[in-house]
Image 1 (cartoon, one colour):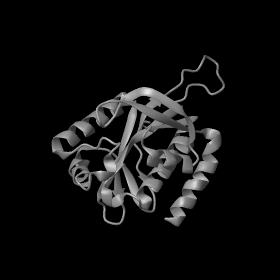
Image 2: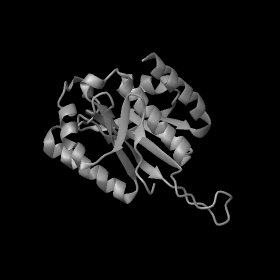
Image 3: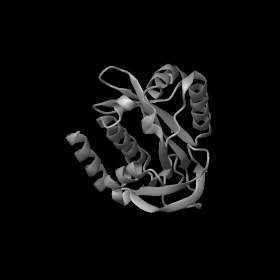
Image 4: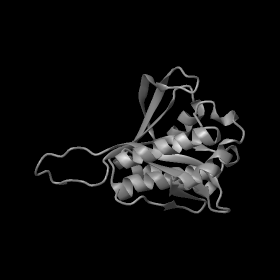
Length: 207
């Protein structure tokens, strides 16, 4: 990951998150808060600045790569998502793959959109762009997703694109209600990616 990629589709562009995105993110997050029952979305400049600074620190460590989601039609920032828990598997000396510079696995999360962008093509295309980069540019073996076990809408959306439910991780992370949350774990592995890609493209074409 020597360079931070810009991922561009027909509806959105995913730009590596930087501090200049903060005002746009603040505006997007200040829309109707009702959709964010299960997602922690920073509110106001101070919280958003801390959110971005943390993302940049993780990027510097090589453990995450965050994006601002920008609507192509007008250049407006509509949300954010990121790769995180980026893994590089140690390889024994003489292994046929040698030393890989790119990740072997990662998680996609910290995903949120302003209320006006929910149920548009933005989320589907953002996932397609990120998964394509993970499997085809990085060559990862696995991409994971975790969502609050109570978040039926998110669980159904992951299942629809072909992500496989792996189980519940108990008291896995802090929930938005500040209690230990149970997380539903989903994953896509490299062998499943072609079918998932077809599903995402079909959903995008119908959007």
